[in-house]
Image 1 (cartoon, rainbow, N blue to C red):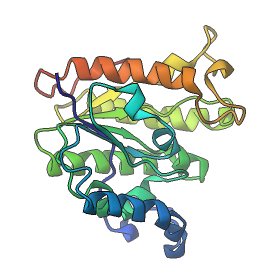
Image 2 (cartoon, one colour; image 1 turned 180 degrees about the vertical axis):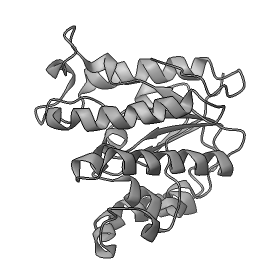
Image 3 (cartoon, rainbow, N blue to C red; image 1 turned 135 degrees about the vertical axis):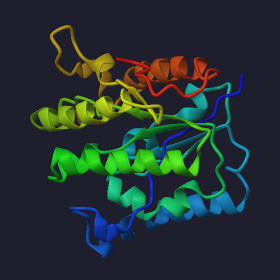
Image 4 (cartoon, rainbow, N blue to C red; image 1 turned 90 degrees about the horizontal axis):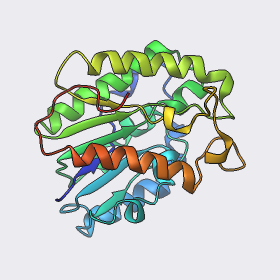
Length: 232
């Protein structure tokens, strides 16, 4: 079986997004984005099975090792908010024709002080754009994770997750994968064994949990896009 997965962000005008960083704030990502462009120019991504895009939770994921049955490209960039990825959308997805899309973004938006309503709106716009650009792709949004460092922000992240999940259940546009539950203790708290010393980023054990969920999702990818919750 060949799998195609992509985590991407959509492009909408920066002025239309609340809480967007100042224009010069995007410049800090220039080296990583230039690397993406060089990769695309070399023809590396065009025929790849998998493209992962998002924030540092994607960037730090060794997708080649986690999904050895597919050719995977990682285009996550650390610290990225949804507006950041939207800003660089053309460079991020250039040359890609994915059959499945995996999205992880929004956590840094909440940490930057944006409201759950605004973050959910951006995420849903993102997912709608992906559906338009890739009408035959399977699309899945990975829920924001409940990490030790951002415990005080979890209620707001959970609100975004709930809004995105509710939309996923209403149509055939995308799926929602709850990856946060896999990182919790039996008491429903963040399990530190899955995180690095910073309490924010996952270690190999944490990524193994995510890999199992995404791999199971891909195993079910033979059927048409259902829009139903793939993991709850």
